[in-house]
Length: 156
Image 1: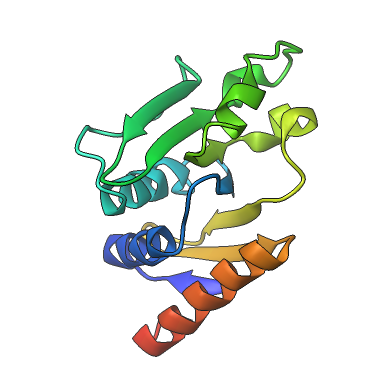
Image 2 (image 1 turned 90 degrees about the vertical axis):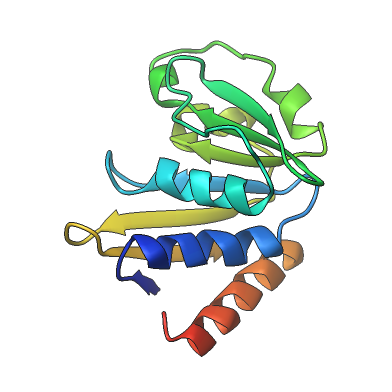
């Protein structure tokens, strides 16, 4: 469990995570409204070199951005809670981009088996805890690298 004390800590977490991401990586962001999913997406995007403003794609569902070396797809599937519509998710998953998905539980049947899951919980006004769950060797390596670097910084 990672304890994030403030916005600067969330930025540091996003930057460290981005350093370890590569083409095709899939990150699922879970948490209640206001937990910090979009904020984390913004920090990851900035660290990947995205120049445009990253905001919640709630009404578009999917927004794509070009970073310095990687493309980023940011998905917010909140509006798909009671939908059975396939918006061509496979095309995005095969696009060799980093993919961040908020509210992924609403499209679980379309998700690739391997991914990194970040469960974000708001504890106080600016304090968050993040639990990282990995389900393959590649994502376990990312998880361990981020946790190791954050422990050096004193965030764990």
